[in-house]
Length: 340
Image (tube, rainbow, N blue to C red):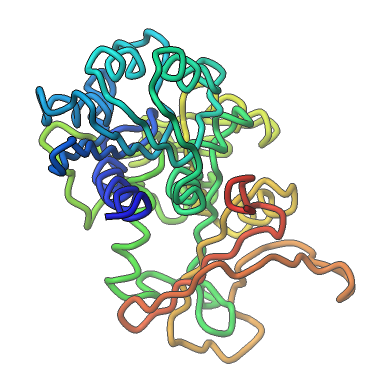
């Protein structure tokens, strides 16, 4: 198999850790022994083994002289676990192939330096675009100190979210709702406006998605912009009245790697208008309200002329039951590794 094929196996392994590892990165590793056998590993929950250690333990004595494919640069510092770079050196591996380097200031090339100093061949950049896409929230968080912001919106095909009387529940089908809950489960925090809390009293917990292992809590931290009623189901929640950038700085410092913004229209307009959204996820139902009196995706005034409209790029589209998911990114939102 080629280096690219083994790295794709490592990507598959990493995907199994997406709901387990945050705020640590979801990393996959594949160890290929000199006799051609391969062993996989993925990052465990915080405090548990990283992907490289899982692969080393699976391989045992076959690790000596092996090649290890890992999606992210091995750590080189002592945290909750011992350094993976040291473990690779002690195991006697001959070569390490990386998808991308780790921008975390505690790593940032030091893992590569440790491996090369021990005489291990290190190759960087295999399947870098795919790895960077998979680790996008983590890489963004480590570079900016802020979480990756996902704005989730659901609407009719004519861009309306609710009828004039405010009724809107289940505008999309079960497949789209389950997909949205997957994003919620992947997010360390979820943001909603106090008006939505008063009107809908949402719990903002994760449903439709099973925890990958017993004891894993998928519910994000709830954040209310404004004040929530004392008996609101969203409690316990963080209540925030200040500037949105301050909120993102606070959440990032608390280790939140991804935040999901759920609404309502005023909250969506605030994040959008301040250019704080990194990824828009729009679910369109095969529904038409057919008039101007239904509620829109955003509140307030929009672009006054066509020359001033916000323009992004559609990254992907997918069919979810009868609904359509559109992933929209700002034009300049690709990570450096994704531009190569």
